Each structure stands twice: as structure tokens, then as C-alpha cells.
Image (cartoon, rainbow over all chains, first blue to last red; front, top):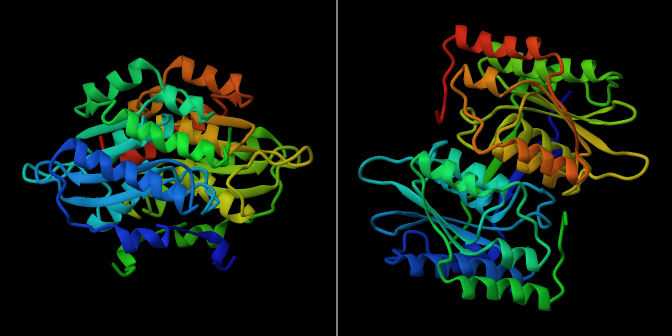
Length: 192
Length: 192
């Protein structure tokens, strides 16, 4: 069978990412980094390009921005393209490597506007990032009828035991605000 | 910032998939379906295109083949591209839909040569497939130093409670044989 376009999956950012995100900019504090992840989520809602979830990947020590992601399930007709997945895929594309484990001089962290679902939590582990930072929590997402899937307290412990530091609840109210915005706009709850 | 090729992630099959897989062929029994998933895993090893994992998605009642996937982490430098993920992404691309929930007349199932990792288990839930069928198990993969991540007995229960039927251990020995083949060839254990 010949290759055809239906046999190639393209993962792209919405156009506004190219216009608004300054890669290489340094985000010093964890709150600065979270504000960017939340802004990605907010822009995704405001511009109508997807669900209310954003993520970004930074070099840990310098805060240099490597990659961002926004929920792209509906835009790209692909249930796997949560914000964290897009951020990881794009970061690895930029580095030309299947791991973000980095080196002694450069390691990476993923910042997500919301606690990740089961898929994304697994993806974070395989991605090689050394820290995961989350904003809104499971209850905030569930209030909007977005499900987290089979994530349990021991899921977090599992990652921590394998060297992934975890910080949750960073700017939680601001992050949850984007979920509220999406609800007020009557946004779609795909795969509910 | 202008778009550049580093900002597009392309997910493709290895070339041999186009030459060897007959989409639309019907696989009547669950064993027939599993044999195809195992063959995908085996070909991925024999042809040197990736890790020893394969998957396929079928229309449940007719057994019509919709999609396949092979582990593509190293080939495409992307830690998210496990066999199940590739199969789901390609199936949704083919249908032009972010869900494989189908309809009364057409629902789908995912067949994987090995119990899925935490990421893929979450992805199966969001994909909309109505059944998941697995071959080799966690112990078979762990013997090869491939990790499953934070999957717990209640993870399976979670999916079942949401309407995803699960059948495991189908042709387990044949499936585990591909893992042995990979080990004998000295295959790479990425992200171990």
C-alpha cells in the first residue's frame, strides 16, 4: 500500500503560539513559569483552539523556555494530544532526542496548568523531565467534568521514587480560573 | 516567531508497514487479531525499527483492521510513541475523529502485544475503544527491564468501570517470545 496523507499524523501548535511565545526567554521563578502555562491554557480558550489546559517545559536552573503545549484534542482530532503531551513532543523535537533527562548542566521540568491525567503522568515519567509542577488540581478539573483517569496517590509516589520531583498547587486559583472561564463559555467536554 | 520544521512533529509508520499490512482485512478471532499485533512487534525488532511492542485496532464485530502501531520512540525521537499510542493516533487520523467510540454499528478494540504502560492505559481510556486485549504481561516486560510505570490493579478496574472490557494473556507465550528475541539481539532499553 502506498503512503497517503491519512497515514501521517501532524502535531502542530495553533498559529497564535508562534506569534505570542518567545522561546529562549528566561522564567526565573516557579510562579513565572506557572503563569506562562496558565496563559497558554487561557489563550487556548480565548482563541477557541482547544480545551482549558496549558503546559510548558523549562531548563530548570536558568528557566529558559524550551517548549509549550496546549490541549489539541479537538483541533487536531487526536485524543492523545493533551497539553503536556504536546509540550513533551515539541521539546523532544526541538532537542532531537527522545529524552529530556539532559545532563549535569541542563535538566528540564514540565509545568502544567492542571494536575495531569493518567496518560500524561505516565508520559512525564518517560519524558525524562526531573520535576513536574502543577497548578489546578483534580477537584478543579472534575468540577468541569474533565476526568483524570486512573491516577492514585501512589502514582505520584511512583514518580518521586524514580527521581521526578513534584510540586502541586502552584498558583492554583489562577489556574482554576481558566477552567471557570471555559465553563462560562460553554466549552466542549470531549471524551467525558 | 515563524513556523519551522522543528515545530512540527510527524508521526509515521516505518516503511515496511505500508508494504506488509493489508488494511481492511478481517481478523475473525481474538487470536487472529493478537497474532497481527505480535507480528507488528516482531517485524519492528527484525527490521530494526524499534522496540519489541506492537498494537492494532479493529472494528469489533467484523474484525476489519483499522490501524496498527509499533514502538517508535527511538526511530522518531519521541518518548510518547509507544505502539498503542501510534495505533490510536493513526486510527483517529484515518477516521478523522478524536474518538473511536464509534456507534451501535461500529465500535473498536485495541489489541496490544503487551500489557500497556501507565501512559498507554490512560490513552486507551480516552481513545474511546470498547475493549483492550493484551498478550505478554508486566512480568514479561520487566524481565527485559522495560518498566510499566504507575499501573495498579485498580487501574484496570477503573477502565472496566467505564465500559472498557479487558482481556489479558491472549497468546502470551508467543507475545513474550518477541521480547526474548529483542533481548537476544541486544536491543536498546531506552528510558530504563
